[in-house]
Structures are given as structure tokens and as C-alpha cells.
Length: 314
Image (cartoon, rainbow, N blue to C red; front, side, top):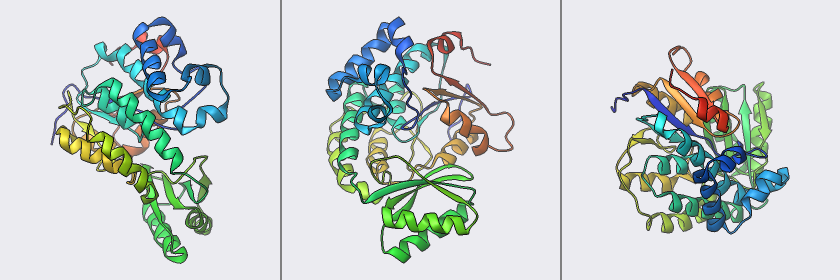
């Protein structure tokens, strides 16, 4: 087991954390942050600053726009605060894993922006009307896994637990028919299934074709040993071997995000301060539920120029 000293873990959010104006204040004050936006626009061929600083919700939620833009924002936060941190563990939720790999030095920043641009396009193209996702609330893990198995069997369609976010908050993904069936079973179990506004069944086998295309590009990337372990979504465990990191990332699009395991593994490795870089603080809110009873775990969200400049370690 890798022991984290000092006890810091750096977290990067993914889709769903976007907001209008994100990253603008930092980019207008810090040239390195603005350069990331320009690199993301070059990689994607999209007017990302126009979309996220002045655009509408629909454009901001489009995964083709969102993936390179969110990566630029979170890496801008990292550049602003990295001199104050000596991280011994990195993790990112879904899309955020790419920023974690860049921040750790496992992949060059320019390549990560190119990869997230490609990932966004591939995932959008792999969407279609037959795939869906839903958040499941107020159902135990055993209950969710039972519901998923029953719905898949009843419909003969694909359905998996896509995200293990916190105890009591899971996301299911697969064919729409199976997701709808599972939603009914959740209601019977006194729980709730909330449909997600996504373009496809992300983190499920329905992304296999897109994942295969992405893997071809991942194989050509310049993988390096990270400065500290990156805790992979697929296993929830820390990894420093570049080849293994590549293999795990190649599997990510079709596999579950094991975020509860990730938080537990970081804590067991010694992490006590969890620093989330990016808007909304979604991952910050997940730390306590994932680490219930571990009162020494602290979480902080840094997204604005003021918060980043004013941050000091506790």
C-alpha cells in the first residue's frame, strides 16, 4: 500500500460540474490559464470561451464542448495552486481522470486536451436514442445491484451500475428499455430513479465502439511515470505504471466509476485533505458520505481565482 505523506489528495470533477462563466476570472488574470483555453479550442476546433462564458445551457451540456472545456478549467486551477501542494495522490471522476493524469505528469497537457476533445466527439456519436442513464437514490448497494440484474434479465437488454458515487447514490446505464424497467423497480423498493440529461449510456458496454477508437489514440500517447499515483476509476486503486494507467483508461468508457472505492483507497493510503479543483464542488460533497465515520477527513473546493489565491493547507 502506498502511504501518502503529506496527506493530500487532488480531485478533478467531470461532466455535470459545468457552469456559465467557469474559469473566466482566472483566465483573464493568469496567462497560463488563458493558454489552456486556447489549446482546448485548437484541439477541439470549437469556440469554447464563447460557449462557456456567454452561451446557453444546452451548448454547455453538449459533451463535445464540455469535455475539452472542463479539462481546461480544472487544469487552470491546478496550475494556479500546484505550488502550494505536494500531492501524493490524484483522482478524477470520469472525464476528470484525464485532468488527473495531466496534473500528475502521466500525460502531456496538450495531448490530454486532444484526447478529451476526441472523447467528447466519440461519446456524442455513440449516443443515440437507445441509451440512457439514471441516478438511483435511497436504495442500498445490494438493492441497486439486484434491481439492475432483474431489469437486464426481464428486458434482455444491457444495464450496469455505471457510477458508485456514494453509499446511497448510484448511477445506472444501458439500454433505455432496461433503465425504464429499473426505474419502476426502484419505486417499488421505496427508492427513486432520476433520468440524467445525457446523450448516451456512458460507462457501459454500449460505449464499446467509441472506446475502441479512443484506445487507438491512447496507445500512441506519450505516457510517463506520474509524480504520484493516479487512482483509477476502473479499480479505485492507485497506479503509477504508465502502461497499466493506459490500459485502465482504455477500459474506463465501458466500465463502472468506482468512486467510493477510490475515496476509501486514498484515505487508507494516508490522505486526509481532499482538494477538489473545479466548479460546483460535487466531489467535495461526496467525501464525507464516502468516508463516513472518518472524522479526520477534510475536503475543500477551489474554483475561483480568489479561492485559489487565498488557499493555504490546514
